[in-house]
Length: 79
Image 1 (cartoon, rainbow, N blue to C red):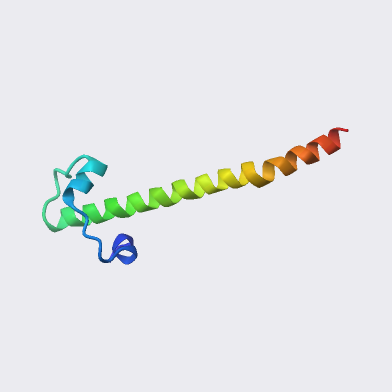
Image 2: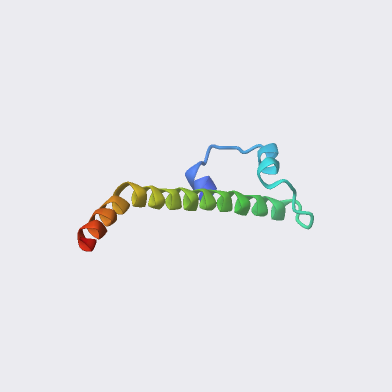
């Protein structure tokens, strides 16, 4: 089982959802190979979503906590 099935074992994704996200069916793959391609595409989607959330969290942390402290420290140092 891939990461997608480990996280959401009861979710049965409709093929229309897959086509909406990726917009195509791989032309050279059919049957079992296409199912593996779809699973890899779903896992890639989850990975990209995780990375986007992680980057957003780091940016929010910077602006909420680090930037005010750096600004205060630089003002103190510059006199």
